[in-house]
Amino acid sequence: NQGEVPDFKVKGGYGESSCSILLGDSNTMLAQMHRRHTIASTIMETDSFGVTVYPNVDYAFIVALVVILDEINADRSGED
Image 1 (cartoon, helix red, strand yellow):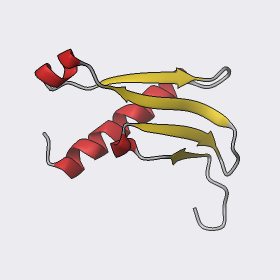
Image 2 (tube, rainbow, N blue to C red; image 1 turned 60 degrees about the vertical axis):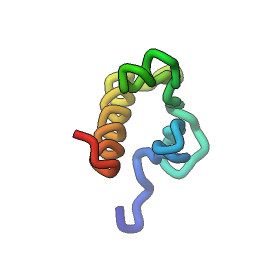
Image 3 (cartoon, rainbow, N blue to C red; image 1 turned 90 degrees about the vertical axis):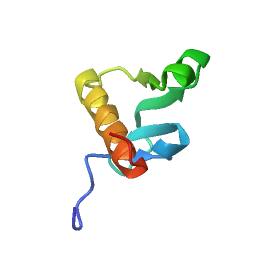
């Protein structure tokens, strides 16, 4: 956005296994995501996420955003 306040922003590093989703340019938290590392996920090479969605926030939007971030991260790391 040029000169406009964004609707939301992702703070932190998705590649660092955790991030926060904030409302616009404020510090109002919409959701927090962290990747869970377990023995089963390491052996089976799968990802597992823990997501905390705050009240009055669209769960479907947050889940879609986490999926998109996961796909972007997979493309950057060369995974299919």
